[in-house]
Length: 303
Image (tube, rainbow, N blue to C red; front, side, top):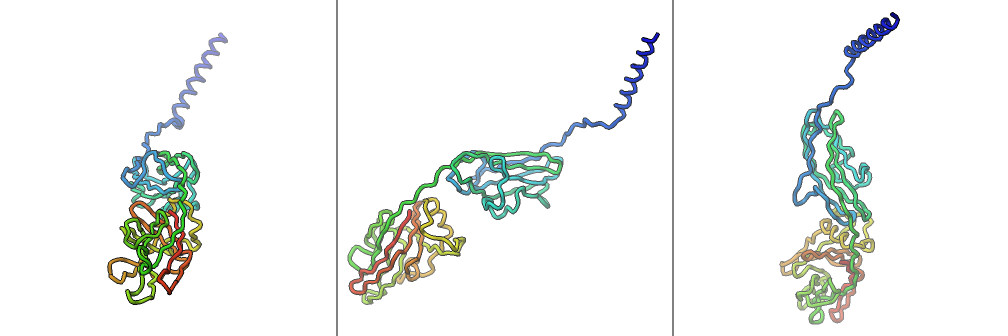
């Protein structure tokens, strides 16, 4: 009899337990919200898959995102699993925080284009782009960037003579640092000669020749640092990277056919471009020789 009462007790206890469990809060709700949609756009100017670049080289990324069930909230840019700091100056100017807070219409869909400077050591690292919505749902796209060493610049010295001086002078081959005639096919740089055939006054101006364009590199202008020095440039990639920051010549040759420099003085720095070749030129000295028009510029060249 006691055993029967015991089983009745157990039955009642289990029944009540099931009843209260079924009436309590449901803590096992299945989350059916979808992750937001994120894509890396592919073009000639953007990176969307594994790539090999020089150390510190800039590359451009274009992202497009679309909400699903919830509004979009942030985009996070990571290198090797760590957020790239804004203070590193490795993200383009249109990025002022990381994570990037999405506002306005961007919470529904967006297209975001920005540049990143690759890491400064020779290695392979993963760059990740994480889109998160207001409910914490995330989608990640990523690719690997492998960096290779920068290429040391070649350093040489050349002397560019007054075009009005001895025959076959007035030009300079920047690849070899060898003087040539002003119209020689090997020349990239030429002197503009004297004021006239009869005037002994040296114009002290230079220009490019054989499809060579020449610009100034001016401290504090076009993004060039106030502390810029010729000596600090060590790599070919640094030289080519300076081209867009050069200051174009504003004067015209006496025959009106080409752009020429102002009067060249010691300490001037120029950058020249011929095809895919770039040359950084420092005016180490300017020598005026009134007696025989053998005036010349002593030039340090990096290429």
